[in-house]
Length: 358
Image (cartoon, rainbow, N blue to C red):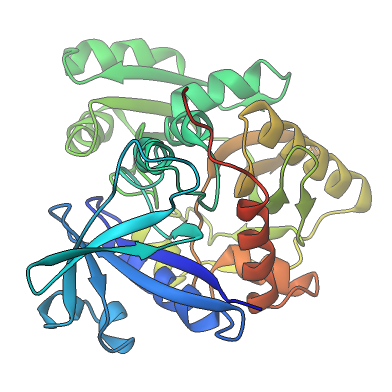
């Protein structure tokens, strides 16, 4: 039986480039070589695409671009659905590289926001994960919150401000919110650019920092509760892994540094929830997944209040994929090992055809 030809994309132009390298290196290492023929496609910070045929270890170490075994890659746009390939340039000659499915292990903007998904659909290539609209909606925290509120699920009280708005006016509009506040770039992942503001001065500083990353910013009121995560897999009736819990130190803040160091926090697996609350969390996660049009996979993050209520936080359409990342660990706790998880993710992508405009 011929092996499935998987193109794993890594790197990218977002500020989560390094996270992508670690995730992709883990995915590549765990794809069963008896089942898959893996092609590694690296994308530089500047957006150049290369077929990388060098040593695996150089990916995570970010030495891959310096290797002579990097060959320029292009996507053939507007091809027939039966023609699934990339174009690779070697020794001055451009040749097709057949691909059955693309696994875009890219985080953040230009990888997780619908732009890449649209490009792959134009090229007629099946791909892992959410489609164009769902990716864009989940990446935009304000749009995601508005959509989720429409389902009846509570979201944090928040104010959205734009870069051309006077900072003092923006801070005044947030006057109805209670400190501490969280200042977030609307379209940024891994909590990059996010700060906690305990007073007006810190709020103004946080706005300046957030606007370094996006032209839209959310000012959110703190939710009195703790964060839990749900790993979803599938289409309109997704399966769920074991729910996990983010345990913060008193006064702690789950920013970029803390997410990847866990210096003062811990991930509890399973989450400390009674059965009724756990059932409500799972119901809410599925409802959110469907409302946003997710498919393939996603991690839905929620807050659980002291009274057992559920509050929406965000959706990650391509969560971290190292062996220590939350998404694969939630599935491992459910009895699904990493290679099997990847098998199921790829199979779901192959069961769908790219959504193309006629």
